[in-house]
Length: 52
Image 1 (cartoon, rainbow, N blue to C red):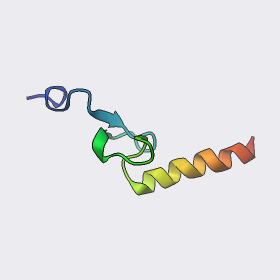
Image 2 (image 1 turned 120 degrees about the vertical axis):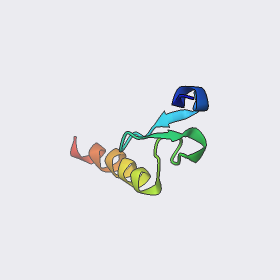
Image 3 (image 1 turned 90 degrees about the horizontal axis):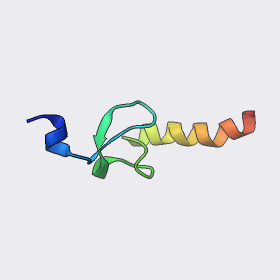
Image 4 (image 1 turned 90 degrees about the vertical axis):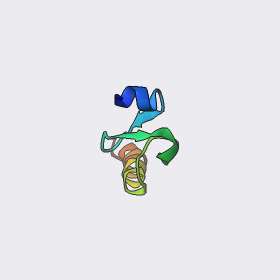
């Protein structure tokens, strides 16, 4: 059984580290695989706005 057969369309890629995670296990609006990745995404979104 392949990963695609097992999970179908239920996997999403973490926007921070790039690993594939089941959608139900993701955090931060289905964009991060863990709280650490969610924190990193939040810092990038929040403080990159000040750099530009």
